[in-house]
Image (cartoon, rainbow, N blue to C red):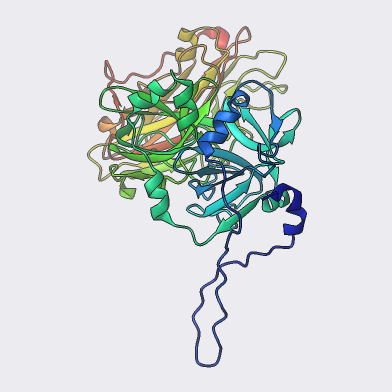
Length: 475
């Protein structure tokens, strides 16, 4: 089968969309056309990967030729990924009994269209390219000097789908290693080649920050967020999630359960990519909706929050607290890009009603940079609460980012509000800067809940109002 030479003749092949509609006595049901592949696979995925494994690292890529018999190299398997959740972006993963490989396709809505999860697919690799992205082997086309995605029309010429999607066939391909097994696979080139991109289920695992942290530190923003799964023995593996996926702002599953994901690879380590938590994360504790007393993402709106500047804001600075639409958070800083300014400003929540509650917990995400020292980062960026109608703020104990970690968001932890249960309160983020040094504080994903799901922050002493700033900090 010299299919590569006859691809243009296949351009007119049309696969009708699948539709099932009810019929009545007045209309005749149209026939249902199922896609039917006419090609035959001649190369197991594992064999192809072994032959081209030299392109799984480095910057080189190569166009895939005909095989030794002069035929196209054709693989087949099931599509074991879905882009419905937005976490697999313009990619499909094809897996057979021997292994799996990622194929970049420059189109969105793949699962809703031609390349459905569970669909059997035949791919003519000859004429396409093989390379890698940060040591993850993939099929694509050249783009800006490296491997990129295949044009959608070209992908149609190089592929045939066969029949209806079959979830049971995908289930038969899923393997269930332990995290320790996966970590051991890094030590062997054979195992790296065999297991890269396969679909796996990890059993009895726990998300660090489950029920407390969101999948993303920056929902709707650029790039990715890395979370961690661990097992009962303390073994860990990264879970990588796009900040733009549909579930980026949802809380990680709480408790212990099973996670089904694509076993991806980035640089020198494994990482999991979850397609849809609603189906891929099972057995975890439910997070009851009525557990949430108040929630404010603070990613695209101030949502009724106010700003209280205790010092005059320099004209060059414009504002101390600002909503950053690029990074989806509230930002406080006393630096205008060229000069530091002294500032003293509160970002204050609306009144939140804790009457009728016996316990309550607050949590939020935050990042810090440029404070000059860990001590300044903790003294010039504080979190406090006050009872409605009162002016006195009471400082609360929170978790801080590791100093020097850049703009890496972390959870402030579960902050115990039991002393304020049954009252109406406001929360405030207090930011201070000086003319000699002005740090940057970023805040989002604020929540007040009835139940502590993460690890609580236990104050070492009774809440006290923060010390007044020194004279140089007030204008």
